[in-house]
Image 1: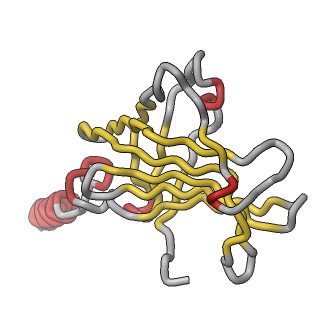
Image 2 (image 1 turned 30 degrees about the horizontal axis):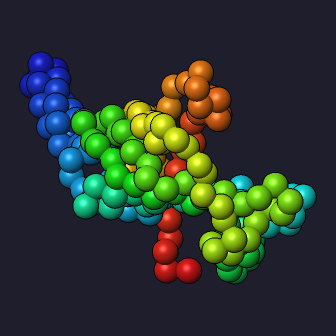
Length: 167
């Protein structure tokens, strides 16, 4: 009797484990193609600083940092905006920017038209990151190793949350 119960329990456990979706291995299932955000309150401005990453099925991306009203989500202005293409290989993504725009140092944000292009005579360097889903695909870790050339790449790896674009 104990042996039968043990075998039944073992079979049930095996079936339940094998039927679970392994989000860490599911980058080809289309769930990556979405709008992802990291929202932090910037206490000095009393606004939300929002880092947004849009990954499109057509192999293009958009990254931005904006300031928004905390309660309404209303856009106040842009700090950074980047567009380009990407290459995806399993859970490794390489961003190939073709445009990077920043606000001048004399103001914290502006309209998109106020941003200035970053001049780079060598072109923009590709940035390779490892992707990892968290919380059953509701969060996305974009882990970028430190880079001696791009010192800003040594910042902590962001964990994006799927954006609620209905706001």
